[in-house]
Every structure is written in C-alpha cells, then in structure tokens.
Image (tube, rainbow, N blue to C red; front, side):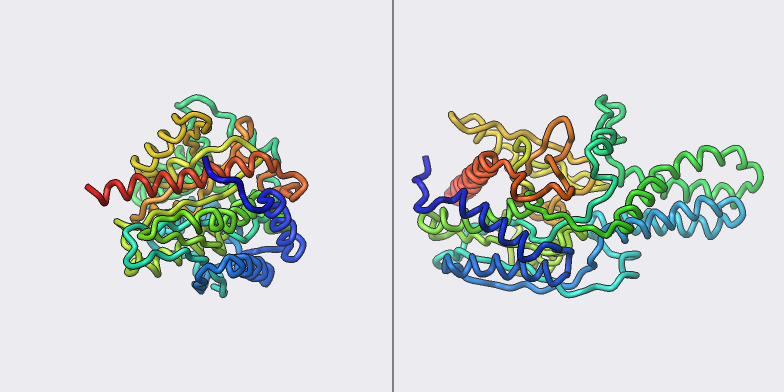
Length: 414
C-alpha cells in the first residue's frame, strides 16, 4: 500500500488541467498553445527538481487534412477509373501504399504535401545512479483534437454497433479504407487488360470505394468546423498524472532504474511527437532495457489497456506486459484491467511498437460507446471529469510501473 500523499493530489491534478485549458485553449499540434501547455508542464517538472530534456521535432498540424487528402484522392480515382484506368490505378495504389506506410511508421509520402512545423517533447527525468539497467518512459500528450460529426455519440455508437466477430472488420474504418484502395488498384489493372469486359465490375468498385468516400466526407466536416476541443480528459488527464507519478517515485525508485516522464506533442496529428522521439533515440535507448507506458484518457469510463495497437496493421502488446497487467488484477483490492482494441486511431504506443520497443497504453472507455465519454467533443472539459476514476487510474499506473520494475529487475538477477 503506497503512503498517503503529502499534498492534495486530486486538487493538484484538477487545478493543473484547468490551468492548461484556460491558458492554452486551442492546443492544435505545432501551435503556440501547444507550446504553452508544454511549457506549463516543464514548470511543474522543474518544481520537482527533475532533470529537464527538450526534444525538438517537425511535423504536420492536422491529421484530418491528411486523411481527407488521402481518401479524397482515392475516391476521385474511382470516379475516373472507367475512362482513365492507368491514372486511377496509380492514384489508388499511391493512396493505399502511402497510408499503409504511414500507419506502420515506415515512411511519410502524401503527408509531405503539407508543411512540417516546429514542435517539441518535454521530458522530466528521474535518473539512475550509474548505468541504468531499466528505463521506463511514461508518455502523455499535451495537444488536443479537432471535433466534428464523426465524434458525436450517436455516430460513434453506430460505428461500434457490429458486435459479431464476423463483422468485426467494420470497427476498423481506416484499415478498411486503406485496404480497399489497394484492392481498387487491382480492379484498375483488370480494366487496363480487359477493357469493356470489366464493365459489370463497376457496382462492386463503387461499393468498395464507400469506406474511402465516408472517410473523406467525415474528415472534410472536421476541417470545415475547424474547432479544437478543451481536451481535459484527452489527454490532460494523462499529462497531469506525470508530475504526480514523478513525485511518488522520487523517493522509492530503485537506484539502477531511470524513469522519464514525457509530455509529447503532435499526438493528435498522428503520433508525430512520439514517433520522432523514438526514431531519434533508437541509437541511445536500448530496446532491451527500455519500456514505454502511455497514459491517454484516464477517466470517463472503465480502465483498459489498448491491445492490439495500429490503425491498419494490428500490432500486439508484448505478452510479458499483458501478463504483468493481468497479475496486478489478481491482487486483492486492485481492479482487473482488460484489453481493448480501438476502432480507429491508436495511442503513442503504436509508434513505439512499430519501432520494435515494448510498451502499453492505459485508457478509459465507456463500454456502450467504445470510447471515453465526451471523446473529442467540446464537453471534454474540466467540469466533466470523473475525478475519482482519474485518481484510481493514476494509482493503477503507479502499480503498473512498479510491476514492470519488479519483472525486469528480477530478470536482470537471473
């Protein structure tokens, strides 16, 4: 049982979230408000006498413009494929391949049409004494999301309404839109070879284009609204947890363990901050000795961990981390935390797993929605936070970090 905190943690967490919402209300990736939020977190890290490290990077400012570009082009290609099949094949293949490579962190292709702007990750470090045998990187993102029709609760419920296993693929909207673009490139190739004989395939092609067309329309709606949500839960709940956890571990962390509390930028632009961080640290942070824990939406639902991660190609959380979480749930007085596969998107851990590191994300989900309450809505505000759930989630995150330390240090002894 952890010792009672020396200060009112719940009040501290709510005050910090409220301050960031008020002082940096429009935290679009790469924006001045995103930077302001990052600076506020840096202030809190300095108050705890953590070592500070800034990691600068460049990324786009809008995931939804990128999605509209990809799947708007794909939908246009389907419209012209009857008369210009070679051009349509090139576009379909480019769209499918571009988003497949992007979602798996292999390359950014069509995204490069948009400008890359300055952002940063800020790290507060509890260093090891001497060489670290284990490094734990705890992540939460300071930026906030756009809102639109696709995040209305009625639409979210509709998207998550296919309960049977045979219809589970419908939950993976971006994966479906990506793979159908590659399939349509195959239809274009058939048209080049067989010409008018492929005319009966047109209704099937229009049907296969529906995921891309719907994706384009929903993202165009977000661009037209151009409204950023407060993001109190997503993800200032995780951000406010970072200094609380740093204070808790400052006096009890093993000397040979390093813990890095990291507020990332550009997560809502498609994990830009974490992907850049992991890419840049590959030669410094050993995969064998580094584990990532993301805290993303710690309230307004039941606590889960995301598994598998990845928008298009699902990537499993390592089994030892799943076992560690399961063992925590077997202890008296500790809730059981189960896996949840998000229907779209993913956390910073998707970028971590894509680079070959171990990691897991804790998140809260309202079961009848398939997302947290108020997810990407203007009502994701400080007054709508379930603070009791938030503090319980922070407690579980603490125990998970302790469980990772115990598991890894026992392994180093053997």
